[in-house]
Length: 219
Image (cartoon, rainbow, N blue to C red):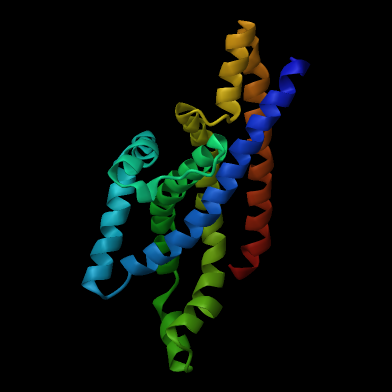
C-alpha cells in the first residue's frame, strides 16, 4: 500500500486543486447570480433564474460531457489546446464545476441576504449609504456566518463529486485508484483511497468550523 501513495497523492492534488479553484470561481459568479435574481429588472431576473434552473436541473456528469465533448464540436472557439492534455482536461472540468457550483451557491447567498432584517437595509439607505455600500458594510458581514455552514456542505459534496472527472480521463484520486487496481489486480487500493478522501474531508470540515466560529461575532 505504501508504494501506491505517490500516485494517490498526485490524484489528491488534482482533487483538492479542482475543488478549491471551482469553489472560489463559483462563489464570485454566484454572487452576481444571486443579486440578479433579486434585481427588479425582469430581464436580469429571468436570465439568472434560467441559469440556476438549467444547472440545477441537469446532471453534473452531463454538463461535464457537454462542455468537454460538445462545445468544441459546436465551435472551435471553445476548443482548449494548451499542448498538455492533462491541463486541458483540468480547465474543462474547472469550467463545468464552477458554473454548476455557482447555480447552487446563488440560492444559498440569496437566502442568506434575504434573511437579514429589511429594516437594516432601509436604515442604511436613510443614513446616506449607497446600495453597494449597504451590501458591503452592513448586509454581507451579517450574512457570512449564515453562509458558511451550507457553503461548507456544498464544498464537501463537490469534493466527492470531483470523482466524476475520471470519466474524461483526468487523473484525480478515483482515476488513480482505478489505474492502480488495473495494474496490480488488487482491490485493496480502495482502502488507502477512501482513507485519503476521509482525511481531506476532515481537514476542510475543520476549516469551515473554524470560519463559522470566527464570524459568529456578527450574530
